[in-house]
Every structure is written in C-alpha cells, then in structure tokens.
Length: 233
Image 1 (spheres, rainbow, N blue to C red):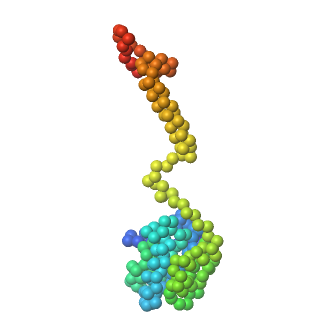
Image 2 (image 1 turned 90 degrees about the vertical axis):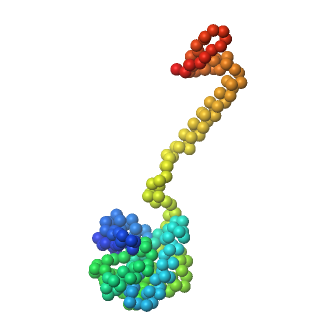
C-alpha cells in the first residue's frame, strides 16, 4: 500500500491542507490499512449525490465521535476534474480526514489507467498488499453502509489492533511495570508504621521512649522530674 504512493505527495483535506511527503508520513497513514480510492468529478451529478453517502460511511468507521477505535482504513480522492476549482468544490463536501492528490499531479491519470476506471463514481478497495479487493464498492456502500467493512477486513485478513497510539499517551502519567509491586510494598510499610504508632499511643510515654530508643531514632532530654521532651535528630 505504501509503495503505491511512495515518493508522492498526499494532501489532507483539512483547513490547512497539510502535505504528507515523507516515507514515514505516508507509511504512518497507509500501512496495514484497507485503502479506498475514490474516483470522481464535481461535474458528475451521481458523484455529488454519492459524496454524502461516502462521508457517512467514512465517519462511522474513522471519526472518534462515532467509534472508539478508528478502523484501519484510508480514503483517497482521485480527482478526474477538468479544473482545480472543480476539485476544490468536491473536496469541500468531503470529510476532513480524506486524502487527495494535488490537481497538478499527473499521477491522478496514471491511477485512472492503472485500475481501468471506466465510470464515475468508482471506489476501488485495495488490500494492504495493493491487490484489488473490490473493483467498485459504490453499490456495496450504498446498500450495506459501514457493515461491509467487516467483510473487507475478513477478506483482507487484516488484524485489528484496538490499542492507543503513542501520541495518545502524551498527557498520561505513565508508570513502570513494577509500579504495582512497589506501591504494595510501600502500602505494607505504611500500615506497619501506623500500627506501631497506635501501639505506642496506647502504652504511653515510657513505652514510646523504649520503642524509639531501640531504633536509635530519638534522643531524650530530661528537664527534671518525670517529664521529658523529645528532640528528633
């Protein structure tokens, strides 16, 4: 999957239209994912009518507002528009996490020929190894919605990993693997100290003095009579 777009520039359909142009960035967003290539044009009325359906499909599988763990899926718009203005018009209707190729990138036409796209809209679904899973999933998406992803996932033998990514740990106070053991140890020692203090409280000053002198933790200053004050070292 990564090889298909290696050394290419993918653009995110967000406000800033951020460019992904390094191998690490491309791999991070495409590796081990089912890839959907959406071939369409703003001139095509059917394409414009299909966009809301595709957006809903994509949101149900990728948007954290709908799903706790986004699915291993990526969607790239391959524009067949005749002008950049037409491409921008369609992109404004699409989800902000969709990727696309810049209008001036000739690779758009190469992909069009590579996958032998004859009609629009067309959604080519690819396995992570770039083999074709479905030559056109438009009808499946319209009829089954996000439920058809489970069939793709099974067919692609894709392993779902429901774990938080590294960046999601940024604000967490991480603990070491031995932390529960250490906390149990300190809790036990705290409990022992509490018991000792309660015992000393019950035995009075003489018992208190005797216990602390054994530990070498306290000094005694006698100031006459049986009264005494305690001074910590």
